Image (cartoon, rainbow, N blue to C red; front, top):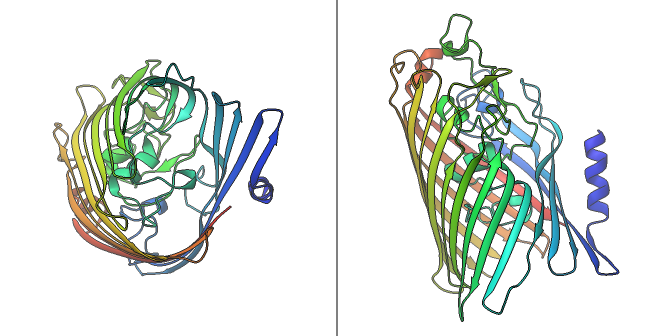
Length: 415
């Protein structure tokens, strides 16, 4: 209830406050959702489902929920010094504690002086997303063309966020801009564990700083399993080994026409480190993406991520993975139609694949239609269909292959 009151107060004062060179802007997002699931138990309920909401007791169900409620605070003191905080409230009820309540999603301070007409720098410190997603471009890092982001960006929202320092060099060309970025960070040591033991998933829930994300009750985590010290949940932003990680990124922007991004990430995790039920994982990945506006009303975008994660003595878990998607979106008046195809896979390359199988192969289709009622309110209808094969499902008495479908209607209010 306390989180609700704080969020409600933030939304009531949503707007802009200015005084003596200080400027505060408060934006809010409220997303009301009705969904119809199939019978597969969702991963947030302790299952191995790929979608945010799944069935209950082997039966489909209808879900009525506040899918997202968030406030984004943007403060500036002059043109160069800025601060940002994204606070979310999760009203869900899940079997594993640590997923409900008020939490910080992002919070940082930046200094951005302009060196000349052609050059600028940006320094940023705090807790933030690496600059990779081209899909989550709305208020509070929400996707604007669909309700559900791609598997690639869903994982970024779940397990990839850093606490550290970032520096960028901005090059302003005559008709376009280039940005080169580097960062050093702590935390994010368990990054990769959810992907290896649960697999790819598709959902719009963003993890908070203190979240604990549930793992299915697989044999590997039982007292007689190979990882009995692993908690039945993952705290993705915890510092475990005391080692700093890094990432490097670059982007090219041709305004209103083209945007290209690339990123290299390495958390430099020590795969032998373990603290309070959480392992450090050595996780490295590379991501690249492009967004192209074909005309005033048609846009296409795509991204690819390739990665590798290892954990434990003798690389007890050793997985490589890939995810990619292509999305096309067209508008006509206040209507938007978007279609996306996702492909994803995980290859298990360790010696424990027989008792802890982490292989996976799958794809998904997403079809979304939206109607913008006014500048602040949008209605979205979405169908997501996922087809994935994961041998670990057989360990808990399920077929290795599962086809899952989720139909959703959402009403988004922006403040």
